[in-house]
Amino acid sequence: MNPELKGRRYELPEPYLVGREHVREFARAVFAANPIHTDLEAAREAGYADLVAPATFTAVLQDRGMQLLLADPLVDFELKHIVHGDEKFEFSRPVLAGDQLTAELEVTRVVARGRVNMIQAQTVIRDVTGEVVVTSHATLVIGGDE
Image (cartoon, rainbow, N blue to C red; front, side, top):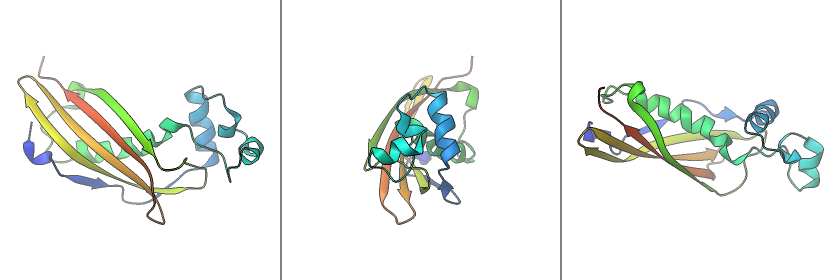
């Protein structure tokens, strides 16, 4: 495990537009039954300007940051050795259809313990005004060759 990964940052090259159909498809995929995720009228009646993305929707952006991390030449392990350890989301506001979001992933901790290693990463997701919408924390567990 390369300790130089700690502190590395990976920013998405362009904003991600949260489309209504993206929100609807994701809501159906995760069985989010609340109509504010799929019915525009229900979302507006609940006080939102547009469809509300389910809480885990931002994993789409986090994954894009992880892909940039895994493409880094400093990464010296194979994808087949990675499992997702844990994840936590801290929201400043809901993600809505129509939002344009940017994301920056930072490797906050690298732990090498024998044959099992861990990478902890934080992804800060902002809207185009720069306001933080959500911060996610994830741990990747990397096993050895077997």
